[in-house]
Image (cartoon, rainbow, N blue to C red; front, side):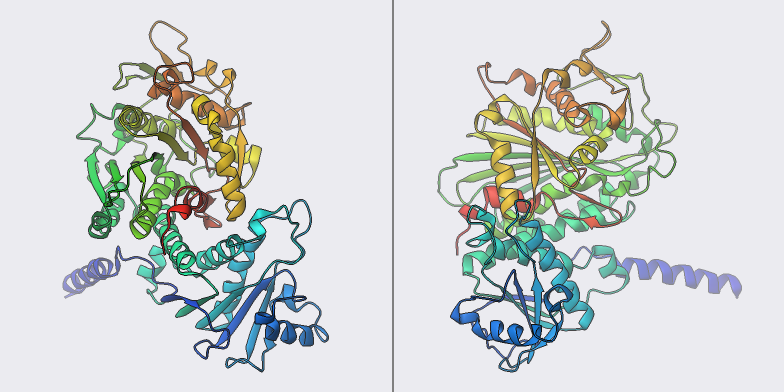
Length: 547
């Protein structure tokens, strides 16, 4: 009887796990609409985000009057996000989420994003379910701050709000899929702006579902299952998908295979390479090809160079680069932009430890014939990207106006040097078109900031072969603490993929930009920030978004 009871209990647990695991998308908030009527009775609270309630336009005078009356008794109402009586509105409730003064040189759109996020946290904690979000004109911002005018403040604040309202994949599975709020109304949003914000918000959700979930829930085969669930909608939008097993394709992906070798005994952890291609269905000529290569290390133990003293904690987030690529493709599937082709490579690999693990001093021959000596198995991200980056470079030769990007949580040096910012670096041809500068400008406008770094001779010399055995030495003796540790990795990627042979002076120059999101992507304590999805979406998709 005891054995039968135990068997039934095990069967129940297994069945429960099978029932709760789902690849459905986030549905929080349950509904997002553009609202033109400030006095609509469809909401139980109005949230006003702004830097001042004075001199607001006539359309928002009722908000100004409500705040003006309340601050006489509570001057800190804006910073405290107090619930203010709003007697003329059907909900009778107003929350003023103040950004504070935005006139200083260090003011930025991040404040709008953070205020939007904090406002929705306040709304959720108070239990409101139908929320009207009003983003007022910014009265104190300097006229040179383009992020403070036009549609940009609405983008930053609304996407900040959606970031909080998102419910993580494993929380949806373990606790329940119920939305944090039922309805979010976005006041005075044009159809184009609503479409863009919704699409980017959903893309952020896909990024975070893959990037934030634990290493078993999002082991490479499980990530593929999640992406496969998107296939019907993606294909309908013009996106094709190819999935390859790294163990089976070891000759095609020798570096990824080496990193993944320790998983040979466990098929549940076998690496996968997902390739996505978006081709518009319209007859509009292609004028630009964007090629994205994302780092997708599903768990980084460090391999034989094992992470110790707690260094492995949070390493399930080491797949945020490839998660970004998946999120960007989901945004593409919703916006269906014309005139641009997008190719995405997502190598999802687990850097495990075991008797089959790859080791320091091994020499691995790449698909292009170059011989690489492994110096640090914990520098696996650049290794797994070097294979697909070579294929990306070869594909770029065939495409119209191509530009290659690598996106990765790659180096501790990036976060130590630049803090919570994406670090963007150009090769020569990319520098000629000022891509890093353009990306930084777009990030500044939408609360997804970046810093620009430069690639120098010193970023290549440490990677040069030091004996007749090898062409490239994959080794940095000082790790993430070394000088120029963040840009050294781009030197390796350029050399291993042979993009360095396609500089300004070559017959086929190929623009290549590297984005290190180690500092900006997020971590186990704050979860994924969805960087740099907002920045890329504004740069490449906003101007192509149709109402």
